[in-house]
Image 1 (cartoon, rainbow, N blue to C red):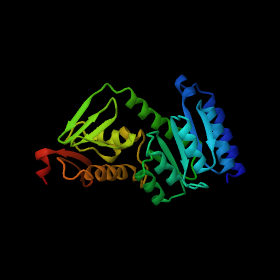
Image 2: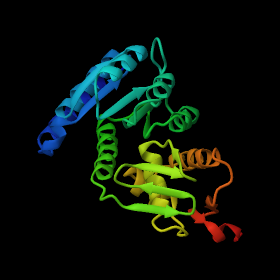
Image 3: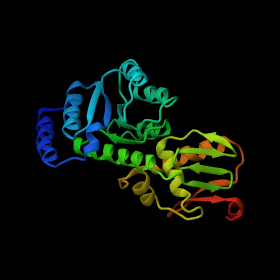
Image 4: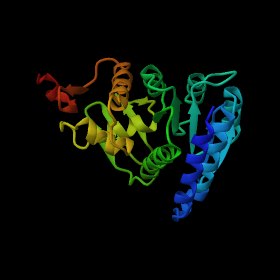
Length: 260
């Protein structure tokens, strides 16, 4: 439950945010906040609304799933601890049919929650406690990535058995469809531009997550692990994501795979 000093601090930030003009498209951006902490939810709803988002809320996991079946949202902010169905179950359920960006809210310093959320298809996460300003910054970063993907020019990237269509955000391996989250797709796209080039974790975070990595942030590593698992599910392929120790990651293809 949020304290009175925290509420005053949040309210003090409202004027700073609302005094600046926001892009017009933000007024059309719909967000579903799923959190059973009523006081915290009220504060975040006020902050999101003052930031020119169209925000709605649910306090129950099952109710959130049913709401998402009926209505379209541009982004979901999803707490882990929820009645009826926890945040992980909600995420697993909606990922069967929806690619809507999801930001998970996890317990303070709980790396297991953070990693599990990313493995299940979350696009980003925030550990409690956090500032509403930081949440809005994460929301805007995720939305910018989604917008850039929607504006893609139809480029087709190919590396051995792997093919990406950047306009439709469709990926195939050996001719079979790859089911990727938006973040996983953008990460794979970054690794393919160009194939064989090593990208540092910081470079990938800036390009794919739209933010710098914080201390002990395992987001990129977890997304890479997810990609490896999904590629490996199709048997032996001509592409591989390698960890270049102390440097970053590189996608290799074809004959390059034989090089240690």
